[in-house]
Length: 333
Image 1 (tube, rainbow, N blue to C red):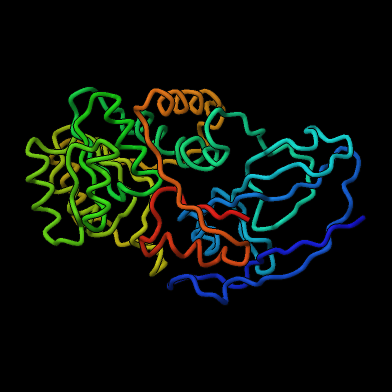
Image 2: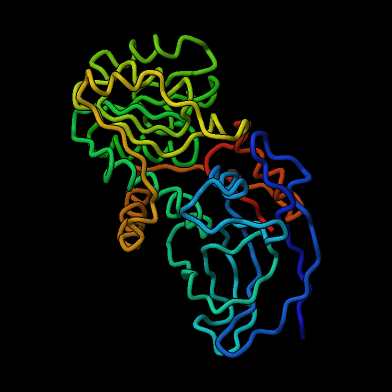
């Protein structure tokens, strides 16, 4: 019997502005019964990332463009509720790109079975794109060595908080930049950062100089804008600057203003590189096992911010751009 499901569709391209309610449209859709080899899945959780705004704007050329009327792209955890000879059995939990839909019919070839001793939601946070992005950006691009000073912007976010802890595991001194005393306190007392800088307390450049007296060996930047400039002002000789994201530009849209301090890369013989985590997709299973081991031995902590109700998906995404989330932003259906 066909299934009627609710879906959020893309209804606007938020270029040059923040996300608005009118950028999404909630509709009822009738799904066909699963054909041979297909399954009917019920979405249990959705995951949210700042990159979704870039997908909505169609500025991210590493993914297919999104057209008005498309189901909003996003990650999720689903349960198999019906299988017509599909690759997974009824009751199996799967994760991957699902879109903002309460149900979907799929052959499941792009989805992965949830197999973890942690909470199932970990596959969207510390074991998901968030965790592997932190791992690959830090170790494949940043290449820290024991004794290095690592500086992370957006440090209390889902990715940034994992980056700092991984750098500590690697024997580095770690400083984080976050917004507000509560987030800074969490970084030091819970996430094990050596020091935290509150960017809302002014004079970020001065605070960096004070907390990183020998200069910064590895920058992991999730923010861009003036904060990136302030970090570049205090790099050490041979520094590696990892560009992961640019939260500062997501509200205004358009291309971010280039760093005014880039000439310091010459003076310090430093390098700056961006990356797309999908380039290491073949290594994700091994990286997830390593991350799970760090969680189990107590050296890696993670936070999840779980909202509730499918109708609240747009508001949940918006939380990322005003700093409301603590850790990985998710929604329980």
